[in-house]
Image 1: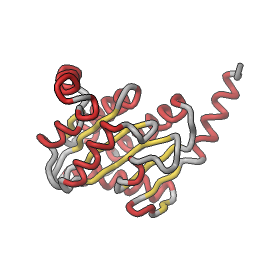
Image 2 (image 1 turned 30 degrees about the vertical axis):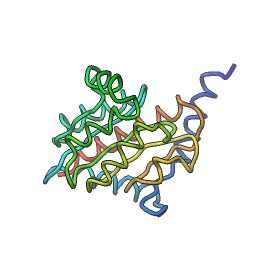
Image 3 (image 1 turned 180 degrees about the horizontal axis):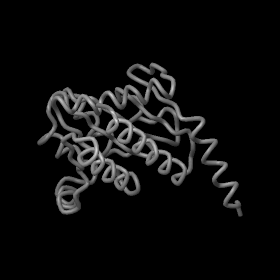
Image 4 (image 1 turned 135 degrees about the vertical axis):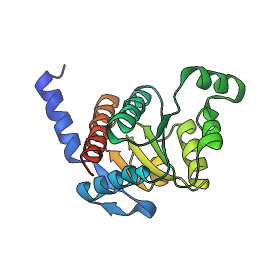
Length: 188
């Protein structure tokens, strides 16, 4: 059994290994990549909105980030994890369509899809990201597990946590979400 201090030391090592990439695999330093992510969010103050998706713990991160984007940063945002709509869409069209369908209804050119997926392989998230990109939306992805995950390959800014543990990946994504919204809210 791992001690509590060993667990926290492990998460500290994960934070030191975060990777940020852009289109066509461009590699950014952490600060440069985070600045790009924050710029994507801040651009929504002029026009557009953020659409957020995630499953399970990632849905909770997306929901919390939605709250902070609206309340603290002052940008329009929609979290597409609303349970009655998701269950209706899953029942009628399959779970792989639960985010794709709302993207077809609400995504506009210049919007920002924030897609949070520990594995980066969830079909419903990848389908939504591909649809959003096809509609001229920008994409901010947060993934983990394997470096070649599908979601990481299609974003404008891709924040990747190189660890196979849900706990470490989700905790890191949560801290990254706060870093983005806290920094954006303090920027005039």
